[in-house]
Image 1 (cartoon, rainbow, N blue to C red):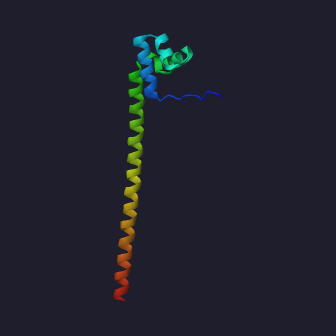
Image 2 (cartoon, rainbow, N blue to C red; image 1 turned 30 degrees about the vertical axis):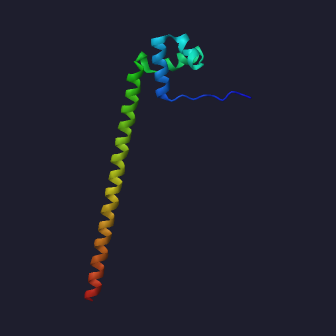
Image 3 (cartoon, rainbow, N blue to C red; image 1 turned 90 degrees about the vertical axis):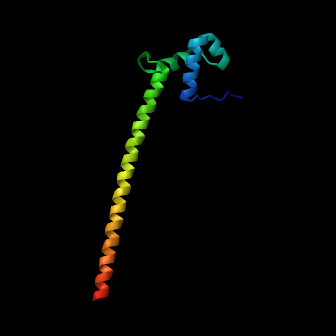
Length: 102
């Protein structure tokens, strides 16, 4: 049987990298069954030697900004739809009143 490739979430990678900094690369590699190159690649994934937590926070802030922009866009769409419905209902009411008068 072939081994299934493991995937790690960003939080897990950060925790493992921090643990490697505290306990040493060799002990951490053996604990999690990782290759040395994997730990080095994960460490290099973080921008410009920035602390992993700072990189993670920057990613979260960027994602939060994107979500807020999307939320504002959706609110505008809903507001436009509500306005259209109000205009349509007012038009229907005016038409029905005019029809009743005639």
